[in-house]
Amino acid sequence: MTAAAHTTATAPEAPGGGKPFGARFVSPLLLGSTLNPINSSMIATGLVGIGLDFHKGAGTTASLISVLYLCSAVAQPTMGKLATIFGARRVFVSGVAILLLAGVVGAAAPAFGFLLVSRALIGIGTSAAFPTAMALVRKRADEMGTGVPSRVLGNFSIASQVTVVVGLPLGGLLAGVWSWRALFLVNVPLALVTLVFTLIGVAPDRPVAKESRAALFTAVDVPGIALFAATVVGLLLFLSDLTSPAWWLVPVVLLLGAGLVVWERRTARPLIDVRMLGRNRRLLRTYIRQAVVALGTYTALYGLSQWMEESAGYSASQVGLIMLPLSGISIVVARLVSERGWVRMPLVLTGVSLVATGTLMLFVTHTSSVLVLLGMSALFGFANGFSGFANQAALYVQAPADEIAVASGLYRTFAYIGAIFSSSLIAIAFGHAATDSGLHGVSYVIAGIGVLVLLMSVLDRAIPARAER
Image 1 (cartoon, helix red, strand yellow):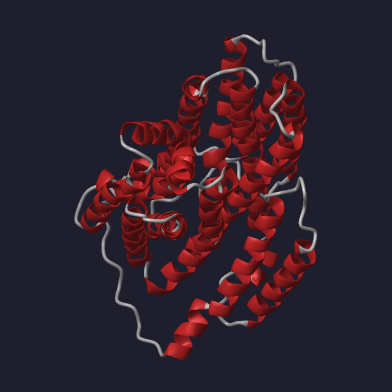
Image 2 (image 1 turned 180 degrees about the vertical axis):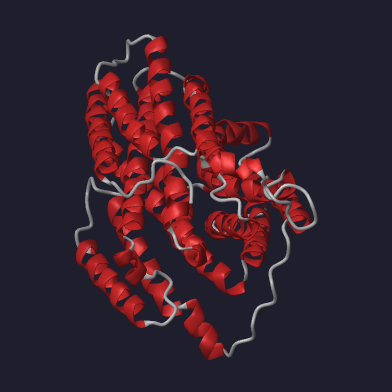
């Protein structure tokens, strides 16, 4: 019996009646989890207007993108850690409140520095949603004895995929009709709706046991968070610009990483349980696989989009239409896979789809028919749809129940590493212009990543065939 079938067979009622994973409980968690990816993408449409209003160049305005990635990469597991101490619902609500504040600060920003603060707060606030949502889902599934809620995990995967693609056209609409300030202000109603739905649909946490300041400092693992933040930021800064690498960062990151491992092995309640990861090699492989898949998907998404605008001569709106098959097929495939609880085979097919995408891209030029580009978008949709649920389900099954919040946050951190690394690969391949030869260079990278994903999926016998306990 698959996990999906097990979930729907004789599912017990949730507290207060109704299904364990009804819309009242799941909707605010899904909405909250979409706020990070949608904010990541829609800001791109407002960078030109922000630069004109504050007299800033493209390099300066691009920092609005990177600051969110950096803050999110650090905050995701940190919020997961706080959720294990103070309660997942409390941290989820706190994150939404931070997002509400960030929207107001950004919309009313009198200077560019306020936008940086707003984007940092958006990154921190929205980072609370996914790890706490996973913790709340896991807690309810364990209490209700439903097994792995494959359909719910599939919904999270679909929501993330859709919002990444929808973010650009939504941002263009908001910025075009009102101004770039709407890209920040839209977070206010989104935060308010999420907050109200959460207070209505998600049960309160149990009271937090009172601890001394010293005990709380140890429980939160402030030194561990600081070392983790410094290590991740240093790594991402190095990966973000490999056209002119800051080689001095390499020994710094290695030293910080070593210090993090030593500290986390010694402290009683670590942020990152390195001993557990040392024993749980299959979870560590899932993290690495997620980073590699993110590297491939973001390289294809942003590399192809940039080439279509600069070399093939398509407008931003036309590029959005060409990429629609990506979103549509991703949704259909993710729903099909999650309904059946498949894990291993979709990961294998992710590698196959990336290889096929890279191979087709090798024969594309700026004179290629739009039908070819639509086909390439469709192939990429298969890769995106197969990977989203499968990796997330593997994480859910492999992570210990009491560490699911931190594990989920760290899962997102590895995805950010892949995403930021992709920008450097694209810059190296394209150089000063997105030419056909540069696109073909990107195609070799994507195909190579596909082969790596395929090997990692075929050779890793610890990946379950289905998401079931």
